[in-house]
Image 1 (tube, one colour):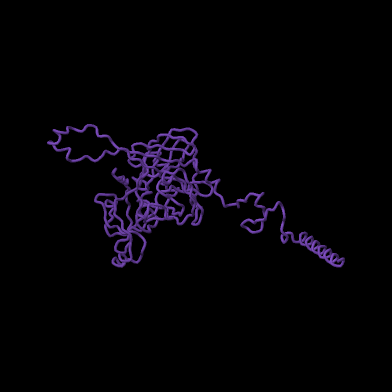
Image 2 (spheres, helix red, strand yellow):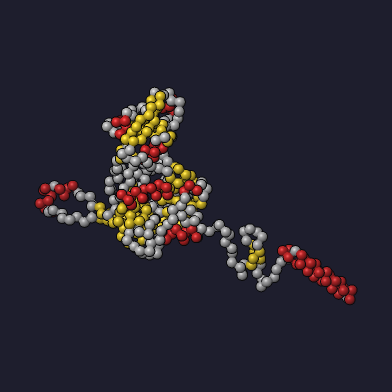
Length: 392
């Protein structure tokens, strides 16, 4: 019996000694016993913490709350309404029926409401939004993130870029800072802020999917930022911001087969926004150059039929009689290859280059006619205003 007790004592002593050595040299090998709480590890796998005592860490760069909090106060909800007279039954215009029912006086108009978003760009109360948000609206009301509401008036619109400026008379307005779009690259994280489906101000996250998107048939002048940040009805006119909370663009359209976000959204870049906004605030409209031609892109088939050696430029399919191009000697079939020393790549490039010209001045344009280059001096005219869609 004494021999068994001695063996037990030696075994316990050796076990305690081994535990002490392991706990001293390799503490992570030994389980801890503190109030019964079992150790858990963070996602990085090397920082032990106790579930009952320590809160989870937020890794640096995983949260965009600072950018959101910086930009959200400057994004407003826009509510518009317009009066719509109900359709009149043609039978009521019959003289025979009028004798029995009499004249209908003062038919009451119904109100149609819609919603969108906007961005405060000036402490003076100027707000940027989409033209289609405020188009044909009789009343415009904005709601700020701090709960204030106010009536707004329309300053001016530009249907060809789908931008509009409205103004409110309120004090202490938060404003957004414009970003440097030249530093933006595909893959950069962006946030879309707006009022989707009228649920209230919402922030969604994505990346810049592409830059300089055009030929989409959305606007006359296109240079979109494409993003996969969720943009839904009600987001129109809202802000697309970078991770510093600075304005990159105005959310304007989505590609969708269902009406909801499919991960392809488009925003008007801040470079276009700034130019249009300043012109509207200054003159109430946007004035662009115009020469009166109908352009057409050079396709491989056209290049082959015309015997062209180059694929850049745009074919002049038609010339407006007595327009600026006609008076300068431009003819149908000419290929416009250069505007004021800048090369023309395609129809979109030509429209943008001519739109930037100052009306009233002469611009040198180079055309290719029967494979020979000819220079023409065109006196630039004012681009006619685009007709907005009639109220439905």
